[in-house]
Image (tube, rainbow, N blue to C red; front, side):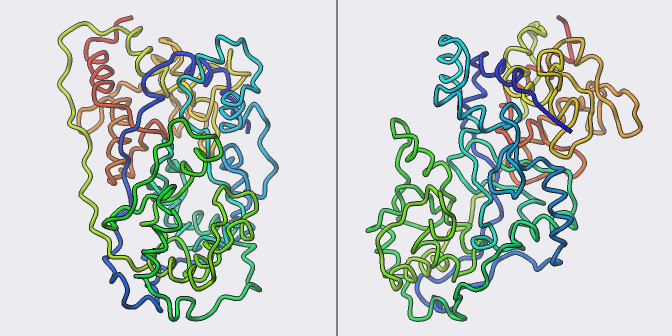
Length: 428
């Protein structure tokens, strides 16, 4: 099914709301166990991901199409999404001045355009990423790229489906490329640390938990290509789990030979230097991550809160990206209304007061209120916003999918506003 909430998305951009520039911290995967900085570099530790069933690539291909992965990602093996249905292409066109709109509107949109300007391509995933890591990541997405505002959304899939998708994405792994059994034999993590600094790896990459490494450069004012490279650069903390040592060495030595068009530059170095850097990245001692926590829930406001204020500060910011009005969104209301990204049509339109009041459609086809209270007493709408905060803190609730899906959580002041409005009887 198609999901084309383009005009709704533009309306959200045009509002200039603060949520489009949020840089709140997001949740991460549990830290890997600390490793020695030099000893044992010849045998980098295996991924901290449990082995999983191999999966069925044919079923995975059908799932990639059904989940509409091509609306954000290139390299899916599917035809590109239509231009007016491609979430990232729309934003890129606006940023580049290619979108057909009045100059004043383009200026206003660009001032607030932060989300979904850069998304990693899935091309050559099998030559870069462990299959079991992909599977685990799909089931429990976490923040791999700290300079991207959006994260991978928590899709409505189970372990078997995640295995199938991972099998499909890694189906074209080039087994003919030489992969030595001991790819880091003779490598020195100590030399790798020196090379990491000398080669400027910290210009783009964060390496959280590794003491004393150069911090990533500021993005503001950089050329688009440099900004995109930094935005897409993964935190190297996760490299030891994401990549086989031999693949990491090959990637560091010549990224474009693995994935043509990658923003990762080819930095001049010898094969021995690439092995040293890989040894440092995969064995550097990492400090444990500090436990993450969701923001404190604020008390209800005593002042009057109207729909107009909630709409301006919350619903127009991110909600309308997926829960929009079909009448002005090219006939489709987005994944949260008319369906998409593998989600059933729920009929939830957050673009109007009447649409919100009408609620959503449950699995039995019955209309339900988004204001009904759950076991903890929170209205369903508020519970979804709180669940996204919990997801960012690494505590996903299997019973509640956090909203906004894959985007930074709504702040505590905005949730306070929504909850106060509901408690006051939802005045217009």
